[in-house]
Image (cartoon, rainbow, N blue to C red; front, side, top):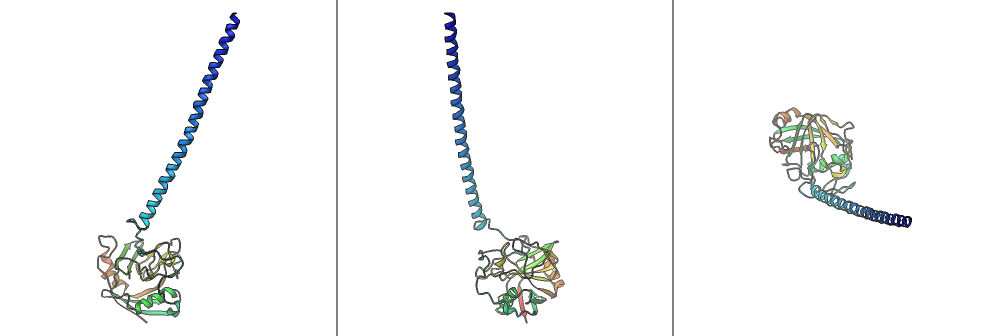
Length: 263
């Protein structure tokens, strides 16, 4: 009789252990399922937040208030994105450059600079510059940007609006005659462009008055169209030595192209 009671008790305890085990297994399975569900929700939430952040950044940095202002060293401020690998507008034929050397005078305020353009090394850019000169485009255009950093001394001129804006109806490429080592010697005249866009050259150019180190970006360097042959010291004395205005961009001495002739 006692033996039967022992068997019943053991059977009861076994059933209780099995019941508790099944309950624990059920709770464990529910926890795993809940964790998987929570992980899915968390991943979805992260993806949604990332998508919203990416969309916000794209808007902010492309068309919003954070639209990038290119580096003063050699970039033009974009007002429209030029079509990749294609000219925009009435771009003159490279044949206009005649594959020859052009000479002339460029006057900033009352400082006359002798200049020389290389139509053989940069036919497309020189053709554009010569055409703009002949059309009178550059007269009264400002030099809106000055960089007097020890690694880059240059002044940039020719924007359509006087503050660095590009002419969104006129842009061209390719990059021609860029410095192979990123060094643009004092006296270099080169075309400005938008960073990472080879076909964004337009009317803007810059004059290097102190050797400039301008590293290539993803599409290369900057088109060198020629050089200053005289007057560079006067340019520094009369304009660039005064430094950069409080806005950190424009020269302290307001500077305008008052004359330009090329033969």
